[in-house]
Structures are given as structure tokens and as C-alpha cells.
Image: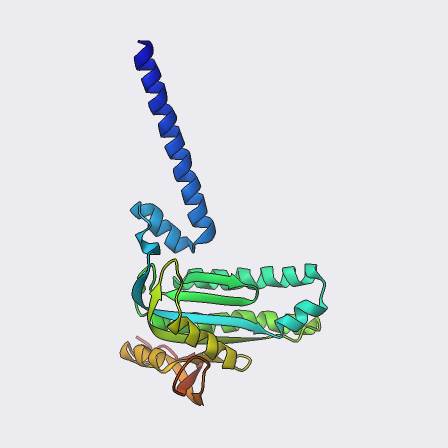
Length: 236
């Protein structure tokens, strides 16, 4: 009896330790990974999605122009209040369009479509999301400027294959970052690949050619386009 009771007690203790370990693992995943990725890993019971792999994705990078000067000349409380408002608006829009938040770095935001969660028409989803972001942050910028903060907003979007996983990824995200850096206030600059992929599923937005940019880390000058607006939907 005593041996059986002791054995049962050990099994119960091990089960509790395992359960606590799983709860801690889930907590870490949800803290350090985008919600979609954490949910997928928890549901599958494996972390294979975090291993290095190749995937066709659309990457979007956006940031606030003038943020460094604002942060250097403002009280920390004002800086944090502005970032909270900005992050809340951006996060809500990312969730709406099914993007994966790759990182928040101050005012810089990286979003990925089609990894680890598959997304239909990732390039189009990224561009439509960018238009919503421009509208939402544009309204905030008007308010911030009325308070004397000279801020603006730019977005860059690229599409292609990238190596993703725990080691991170380069190529596509680098193009999105460089295009964002080149974007003038209010511009949504997209790469030729984003343009081609969007056209494959039908024309949904109005764009204008901007010209070729020589981007750091990109060997050849790249033709870029600025997204103006959505095309009016056709009546049924």
C-alpha cells in the first residue's frame, strides 16, 4: 500500500511538473512570438515552425518620420504615450488583415504575410493593410502636429522568398526596410514583385510609378511604385 501510494504520489508530482512546464512554455511563446505563431505552435504541439525554412512571403515595414527628434526633445512620458497610441492603432490593423507582427522597434514596425500562417493573396493583403494604416496614422499625425510634433509616416512593401525561423530573415525584409526609408511622408512604396503578384489576382488598387531607386544592399536599381488608393468596387 505504502509503495503504491508513494508511486502514485511521484506520478502525480511528475504530472504537475510537466503541466507547469507546459504552461511556462506557452507563456514564453505568447510573450515572444506573434499571436498567430504562438497559437499555431501550441495547437500543433511542436515548435518546428521556428526552425529555419524557406517561404514565399510579403514583408511590410513602416515607421514615423521625425520620431528621433521628437523623442530627444520631449519628456519620456509624452514619448511613451505617443508610442502606446501608435502601437495600439497599428496592432489592431495588423490583426484585422491577418498579418504576423515580426517586431516593434520603437516607431519601426515589421509585418510578415504568409508565415507561419498561410494567407491568401499576401501581397494584396499587405497593400490593403498599408492603406488602412496610412489613414489611421494620418489622423493621429494631424493631432500630433497640432501639439507641435513634426511627424509623418512612410511604408515600404516587398514580396519574394526568404529564409525564416529563429535565425531571422534578410532579402525581402531588407527591401521593405529600404523602400520605407525612401518613402516620402504618406507614401506606400512597393516593389515590382508586389506589383506583379497583385496584378495576378486582379487590379484592386491605384498605383503610380515613382522611378528607380538604388537601394543599399540591392545590386541593381529597382523600379518602385506608390500606392495611391483602393479602386472603387464594382456594383453587383
